[in-house]
Length: 231
Image (cartoon, rainbow, N blue to C red; front, side, top):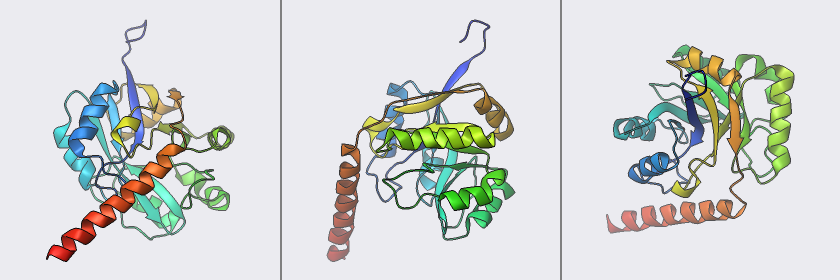
């Protein structure tokens, strides 16, 4: 609560679970970590699926879940929030954005200036679509370089876009490394209004975490291979 009695919420806007191919975090471990981090709302944004988000919403105890998806568009990754249906991958950025909006969802662009990721929207694409997005991730805890978050924040200010923030957690220990603190909200429109007045808080996770993600990808691949060999 603030001095005027307004409730402030901590919202981690970018997280992953075992439903992402590069995460081994079980939903129960994810839920426990969310509570331990003192988050009030988490956006569950697994790669190209909303199944984990829907299941996490069922497990939520003491926190709220915004169902989301980090969609692999042909032009780079785009996050849809407040979804009830999955968004198909491999569409153009424009079509991906339109499909998110068609179901009343919000569009967030993650890690737009990242130098340690291959699949982000490039500057040319951002210049093409920025007027159709709802917010831009200005702090991602997994960035390898602080300056990449700084550039994102500068772009958001230039275009008048609300700033998003998230841990981009792929392991339970990362959850809550970054969040945006906002007034309470009831739905997508309220959330964007709250985000415009929100405060971004976060610390970088450290570059070692990208190595651990590669280890998790290999472990999941090996587990699938072993399971297939037994059939």
